[in-house]
Amino acid sequence: MAPEVKVPLLEVRGATPAQTLGNIVVSIVGTGVLGLPFAFRTAGWLAGALGVAGAGAATFYCMLLLLDCRDKLREQETEEDGLGDERCRHGDGGNYTYGDLGERGFGPIGRYFTEAIIIIGQTGGSVAYLVFIGQNLSSVLPALSSSTVVLAVLLPAEVALSFVRSLSALAPFSILADACTVLAVAAVVKEDVQLLAERGRPFAGRSAFAGLWGVPFACGVAVFCFEGFCLTLALEASMSNRSRFRPVLLQAIVGVTVVYVGFGVCGYLAYGDATQDIVTLNLPDNWSTAAVKVVLCVGLALTFAVMMYPIHEIVEARLLAPGGWVRKRCGGVVQRAALHLSRVAVVAALAAIACFVPAFGQFVAFVGSTVCALLSFVLPALFHLRVVGPRASPWARAVDYFLLLSGLVFAGHGIYTVLAPSVNY
Image (cartoon, rainbow, N blue to C red; front, side):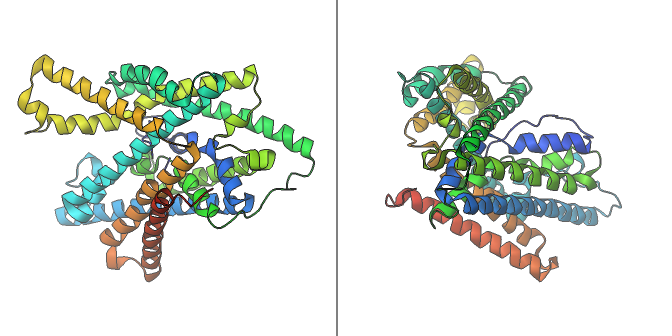
C-alpha cells in the first residue's frame, strides 16, 4: 500500500470487473515503482524479485483478511437484528472502512490508532512526493538544489492548491499523475532495452544476491509500491457483483507484481551499480528526458493536493470539534482564516521535513517497512484474529500470527536501520 489515499479512476457504484480492475491498478501503482531498480541493486536481481513477489502475495492475502472481517461483521449484525438480508445497523448497506474494522475489533482506541497510522502513512507518502519532485527537477536545473526546489517552487504552489476544498475538482490530477508515471516508466524501459542490447550478456557482473541487509530494504520498497491497501473495502463495495471482486483483485495483484519484477530487474541489469535511487536520474541528459521529468513532476505536484486532502480533513475536524480551539475562540471570517492557516502550516511542515530527507530510496524503504507494514500486514492479521477468532481454522490462525509477528519484526528492523548509522546500503 502505495501509503497514499488515491482517488479511484472511476468513482461509481455498480462498477464492472473491467472498471474495478482499472481502479485497483490506479490505486496501487505510484512513484514507488521508479525506486525499484535501486532496490534490486541493493538486494540483487534474484533476491529483489523474490522480495517483490513475496510482498505482492502477502498484500493480496491480507486484503482478503479485511474482506473476511467485513463479511463476519455483516453476519453478526444480521443475526443481531434478526434479519434475513444484508441490511444492518452499520448503515450504507453494511459497508465498512478500515477505521470501522478497528473500532469493531478494539473499540474507539482501535479506530483512533488505525486512522492515526493511515495519516502517518499518508504523510510519509506526501513527503516522498516532495523529495521525488525536488531531486528530479534539480537534475533538470542543476543550479537549484533539491531543497530550493521544494521551498521556492513547490511550497507556494502547494499552499495555493491546498485552498481547493473540492475533492472532485482535484480527482483528475491523480489520473494525470498515473499517466505521467506510465510515460516515465516507458522512457526508462526504452533506455533499458537499448543498454541491454549493447551489453549482450545482461547478467554479467550483476549480483543475484547482494547481501543479507539488502533483502529487507528491497522488501520495504516493494511494500511501499503496493499503495492503495486502505481502499480495498471501498473498491469491493463499488462492484455491481461483489462475488467477482476476489478474482479481479488477484488478476490485478499478479499483473502489477509481474510488471514490478520485470521493471526492477531490467533497470538493475541495465545500470548495475550505477543505478540511482530514482531511476529517472539515470536517463541520458537530453531534451526528451528533461521533458519526461518535468511532465512527471508537474503531474505529481498536482496530485500532492489530493494526497493532502484526508490530512487536512482530520486536522480541521479536530479544530472544529466541540471544545476544539477554533470552535471555542473563533467564528465567521476568523474561523475560515484559521482553517486556511492550518492548511498552510501542514504543507509548510511537510516541505520542511522533505528538505531533511537524505535520499528518496532510503526514505521509501523506511516508510514501507514501518508504517506500510503495520497497515498492510499487522493490522489485518490482528483484526482477523479478533473478529473471526476461534471460528478460523488452525492453519488460518497460524498464518495470522506469522504475519503479525513478521510485520512487527519488519517494522522494528526499519526503525533500527534509521537509528543505526552503521547500516549502509
